[in-house]
Amino acid sequence: MTRYYTGRGDKGETDTMGFGRISKDTMLANLLGDIDELNSVVGVSIANTTDEKVAGAMKVLQDKLFTAGSDAASSDANKAAKRIKESDVKWLEEQTDDISSSLPELKKFVLPGGSVSAAYLHLARSVARRAERTAVSLSKKQSLNPNLLSFLNRTSSLLFVCALYMNKKEGVEEYHPTY
Image (tube, rainbow, N blue to C red; front, top):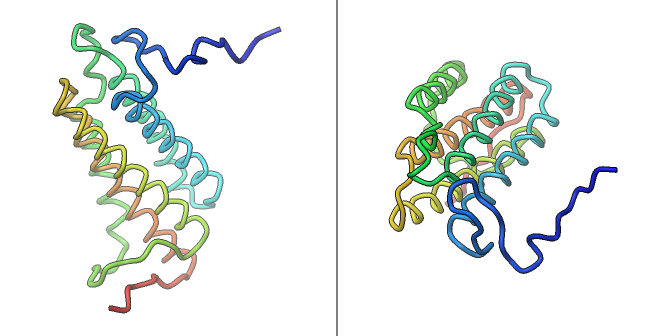
């Protein structure tokens, strides 16, 4: 029988690939948790979209997010710690450009929501922005792959245009602030 627990984290520590055991309240543990949460919300987004283009991009993104977590958990001594490449950032930009090409010019701020699929994509976007903020804070204390910061930034952009795209495709008007 396979056990799905070890008990090793019961005292508030977790294992990383490059840093050994760390406290679960460190900035690194928070970044790893943010990336894991983002990947989970992207999974919920996939489950709630019927659009093949968006679902396909999100499935690739999930794989890249798993790589991003591995990258963050690796120390500088680990030569493989630069797993997120400029090409991954470029891929995000290409996806964002492709999906946004069918959208009208944005002239107002957009409030998160609309269709169920767009709302989940907006939720994923906000988690991506938190992961980026955590990565920025961590990068001031220890060396991180600089591509990781760009990757998280572009991830939120892709998720934003996917949300807009889904609302447009599903015929749901965007919400705008009334200020």
